[in-house]
Image 1 (spheres, rainbow, N blue to C red):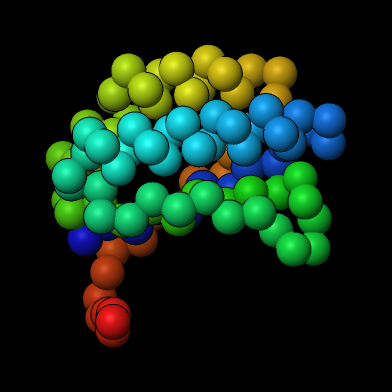
Image 2 (cartoon, helix red, strand yellow; image 1 turned 90 degrees about the vertical axis):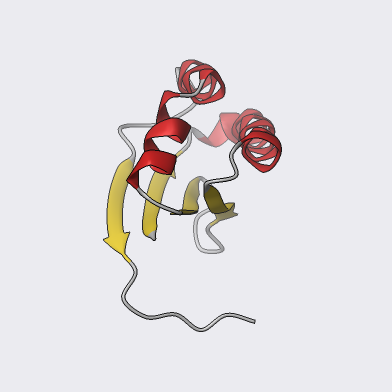
Amino acid sequence: MLTVIATLKVKADKTTAFEDEARKMTAHVQANEPGTKTYICHRSTADPTVYVFYEVYADQAAFAQHGGSAAMQAFFGAMRGIVDGRPEIAMYEEIAAATR
C-alpha cells in the first residue's frame, strides 16, 4: 500500500470553489479508480483555508493511474487561481495497520 498526504492552502475567498472541485474529484475516484482504496479531503479546524487529502493506493500503478487521469488533470486546471502556493506532497509506505 502507498499513502499520499497532500496539504493545500486555499485563498480565503475560494474555499467554496475548492470544496466543490474536491467533491467532484472524490466522486470520480469512487466511481472509476478501484486501485484507490481511500481518498478523503479534510479541512483544518485551526485554519479553514488549509486542506489535506489523505489517499491510499493499492500500489504505485494505482497512484500513477490516478495522477494521469483526465479528472485529475481537470482538477489541477481548476486549482489555478484557487490554491495559494504549491501543495506539499508526502508519500508513505504502509508497515502496519489496524482497521475496522
